[in-house]
Amino acid sequence: MTLSTVTIFERTETEINGRPAVVYDIEKKPGVVNFPHQPKWRNERHNVTDIRSTDSNPTIFYVFGQRPKLDQVMIDKILGSVEFFDEQNSSIIAPINEFSERITKKPFGIYVTPENSPVKTERFRGFHTAVDVEYGDVAEDVAVFAVADGQVMRSGYVGGYGGMIAISHTINGQEYVAIYGHLAPQSLVANGTQVKQGQQIGILGKGGTAETDGERKHLHFGLHIGSDVNVKGYVQTKAELSGWADPQTIIVQ
Figure 1: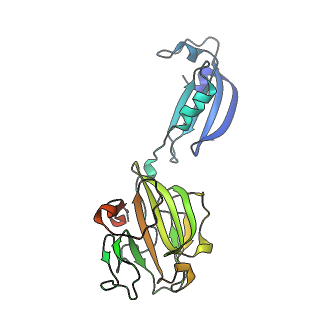
Figure 2: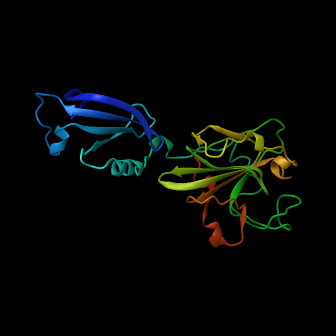
Figure 3: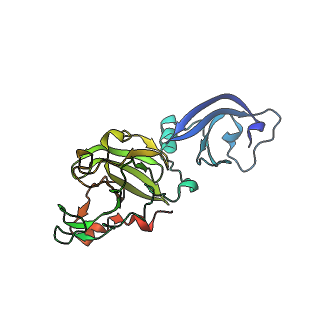
């Protein structure tokens, strides 16, 4: 079945699960033989929904034929359950320039105490759930970017961070919530925003100010495994730490 073999009575553009879609009201043209290997109702008037599943060009479409006798509520439930995977977003990019080069004090998993910390005047204790990207030597504004497509789950001031944004990302089928900490609160994109990979989501806060909750100028970047928004910068056991991923093992540079 192709659009050239059917009459289109109506074409409605819509969106399904964040993807552009088109609903066609169609019927097989007179004189066209019945479509082989198709149920009988496909030769009658019915709706077809085309959903664009990737942003690449050429793209991939999912096509759903709607049996006329099937309840619309059920159709909406089926379409609403569809999940899409875009190969262009199967990896994540660095959230900031010179990402690996500037992780010089607190890598992922280091156990920190006020006595052994590589940072002066340490106020935290535990296993570090993230990496710290140091920018204390840079006076200019430093942009922070979304590492992948996603949705902002939390945005604003959080104790211990100053400005912080949490974004839900799906990478290679695994869901993560990325924590971007110590950003200038006024620079953050709003809660609920859908972001694209590489989109600027804020700038680093000024060191020693409320923008970083008194911390030095740096990006705290963590990847919590799963869909829960967990903003802990430190945990007390290795079992808890296993709920986080080391960003340096995942990020493509």
